[in-house]
Image (cartoon, rainbow, N blue to C red; front, side, top):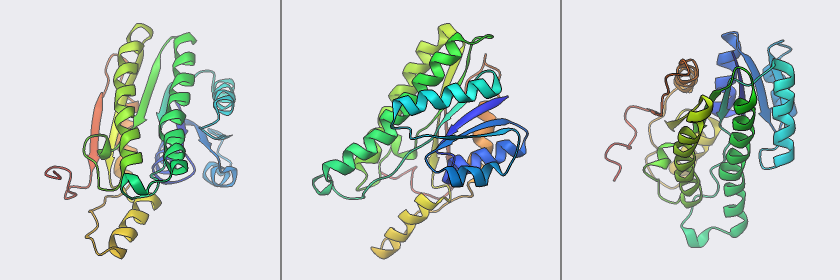
Length: 241
């Protein structure tokens, strides 16, 4: 089995990539930071460094071509790359921030899903699996998260549509919604919560996410985990409203 992981240089993407490499998977590692990807690959034959920016459609297409050239096909895409952006009410969000978050979290995920779908549709045997990284915020937002939350709601719509459109081509699409895995992005949110006098949410080991993605990725294509929520047990999601 092989998988292409976007945002593989840090956080959730890196944790999932390291876990699957240790399990013997062939893994395409896509991110902007070549040095971080090289460090993760660490000379392993089954790791392929794909330096690319998900907001650049041509770079995305070239990376997917390189992945298929190396591994013969693409079995799974973990469509993961994303950023949070500035935490503030909408009238304090500058338009550059809005466009940056949309460019990565929505456009970038669209470009990668599009590239994966096209190759899965045309490869033999036909089919594959796309796993989109949603968020708890795809369901219930935090305060001050208008950019991030808006894009994550859009990803849920993308997931549902790809599930429907993929049926004719043996392409499954599911979404993992993650609540507070310990990554640099979450640690930054905790730091900001502490600095503002708020009680930060509970967190969980990112290993739990890596194992959940592996479970989703290893189902037979006749089965699909449509949505999975993996969260720190005591974080305020249930009852957040």
